[in-house]
Length: 428
Ligand SMILES: [Zn+2]
Ligand SMILES: [Zn+2]
Image (cartoon, rainbow, N blue to C red; front, side):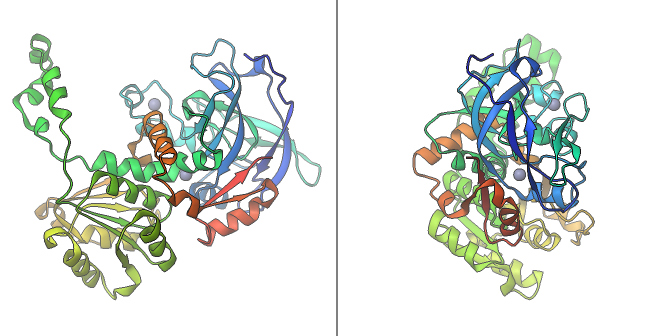
């Protein structure tokens, strides 16, 4: 509950029909007593625009229309629902990321990105009971329509919105909202994918104790977990490893920053846009750059990657963030024996992957899809916020461009054309 006066109306950017221009319209703000007990009223100061928003708007990802999209919000808490079970307070600074149910097995083991109802909760604009929630608005022709909300639990293309508590992470107050929102989706995804998937077969994975803890009858009689925890604190070294990142949008940049942080022996950045390659050289200090356009065939590309990789073995961890089947094929074929290829960019749904299937076994490859980097935002986002405050993410200054809400359609155009990596709507 709150003591301050809450606004009764707010501005939002509604997508009325698939692919038509966003309209800046007004909706009612729910009063504090009308908030669902899991909901938090947030005044967004900045809302990032991501290719997933553009996919939902353009029809590449199915969505109900009219709708209020937006899933990278940064702002402050204005009110919390009565009898709320979450621990947010009025005045908290928050980042809104993806939503999860909190009840399924994955959520209970702190892997919210693997939530069983991830897709309807985030992309389907439903609440936890899989119901649609709609708010009335008057469009430019003065007709009353109903817009679906709760995109990623937040619909942060609105200024003051009722947000599902599980989409929110509290952060410190001394970071500008435009930076905070830029961490909420793509950057977090790339960063967390590398941190989570770089882990190799550590010693504790192959011990008698590890195996025996899987045997419930044995582990109930023997204390084995503490021994395993101690060993897992050993710091792993990546100095012999090669990381290849394909596609240098926000996801790819997050992956490169993580690769540098973990100390990979070689970090290779690949794109077809020379400006992006120059950006990662200047801002992240990556000097092994590959323009995929320079190679006439997959064979030529793979040979080049092997030549520049550690011990000329090929890639030990490959992150595909461009979303093209061609890049995925090139990335997989460049894997070293025992290498891992991770798909994080949203690929063309119907494009077939053309690789010799026998190589997956004989080269002992792991090929995996990872949603949102398997991140737990409550851990990853505060960590990234601290990196911004420590001056370690200067790259954000080169990728963020801010727009007022009435320039939304220009911002979407600039993102679609690849002119701007991270457009951000700043609410007045
Ligand atoms: Zn869940
Ligand atoms: Zn996104």
